[in-house]
Length: 435
Image (cartoon, rainbow, N blue to C red):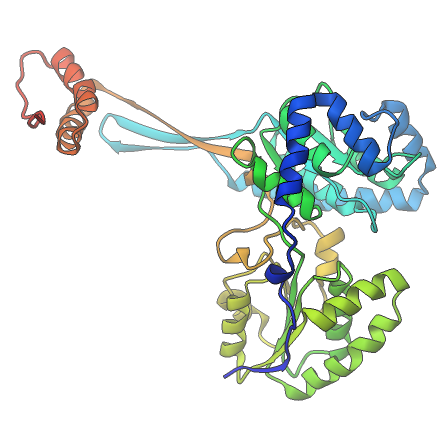
């Protein structure tokens, strides 16, 4: 039975502030006041009174301001994400099948017409989120992609994010963050088409705005604080394990991290090492990582690798790193995770920034039932059918009888009229009309 060497004192669910009332009020303001209301909220929350839509001159200036190495790094990450997204797109295909002689059904893959990509701002410049969302939407074939991010007061979107958005193919870029940006993309303000889907990470207000708007628009997922789990055995390097846990804890003060292992000595070394690694971070990063480690981190000792896998699947983490012998066994055995990192030669940070697979992933155990952002999120799988008259005959007979059994006489008559037209000389047992 698993033993907890370190337990969390809080959970994300318990600590989640109820922001729904505030978000709904802000959404109502934009719904009623349109662009003027969105601009007013941008002034209030973003401290931004400049133009909302970034111009080509703004983008070109950002590009000119960036060091060449920064642009090369962004280009490198974009190329990897695009290559992986296009490979995913090739697996999502149109198909058709002859269900019975003369009855053909199929499916088509159709990209949505417009997408809105939210790129977080604030403490960190989320260059990678711009790359992950916009690139993937374009690889899916979305016709118009709007990207937005909170502007820096007096300056606008940071140069690196603005450059990344443009490089990845954003058709319109909004100097706007928060609920007002989500609402603007959902309702088609500032001369952009209404978004069919909203994607990208954000704070609790952004996540709640997406949740409230779901149905009016599609969303990638309802996101909570980012979380990460490391599985390790005696072959793992405790220093690398500790560094990786700290690196993910710096996301925020309520970002859970877990270590699940069958090696007590390794667990104790990691627990002892983490505080010093946190103290060595810059103050802002250290404050987040320290709170996350203190309040949300857990270290779980298991008897063997089967119990390790069971614990991992129970947690269903957003990010899952395996530093164990026999990586292929873990690849075959694990079932619940957003993205999997096998061996110390890769790490969640690689996936977060530049290696290719998407970093917008299910949090808070949602990996039990969904994967992360990929080209398929921007596409609709729709079906079609056609039939010869001979093939329609048995389908119509069955439809009429089933419909009447259900009491749906109008449905039955849709079948009756075709049988009467196509086969006027035949009689059919079409069930009994309900009284």
